[in-house]
Image (tube, rainbow, N blue to C red):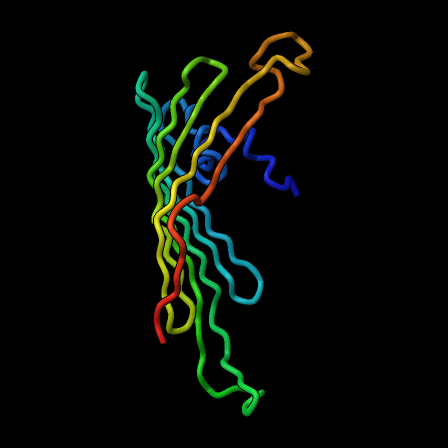
Length: 167
């Protein structure tokens, strides 16, 4: 329901997904493990770990896997099914780095490997995510910058094209 607004408020290990600049706000170490079963056999698994190395920045490793389950193959000749099933899945693994330049500005970057498969075809690509976070004193009731509006920007999945190969 936030429609991508988390790009400006992410400040934990999940930031590697939304905006890698948010990783700069991690104090020590964090880990995340999320398993989310969805409807019609779709499952999502997200896991990651982030470690802050003061004063160098934060390093994170994450993995995201989506399994779309099995679906029966149907054709015009066999609309009730051929007895054969196909599956689809997607996988992404990333290495991220983030750092605060000053206490109100941080940047981050992720390098990722992306893989997708459906039935007898596979595709893979390399991509990068780039992000920044700026904390302002706008709308701060106390006038303190750390309590003001946050502005975030993220460019996600900029890289090579996924091209499916197979029969």
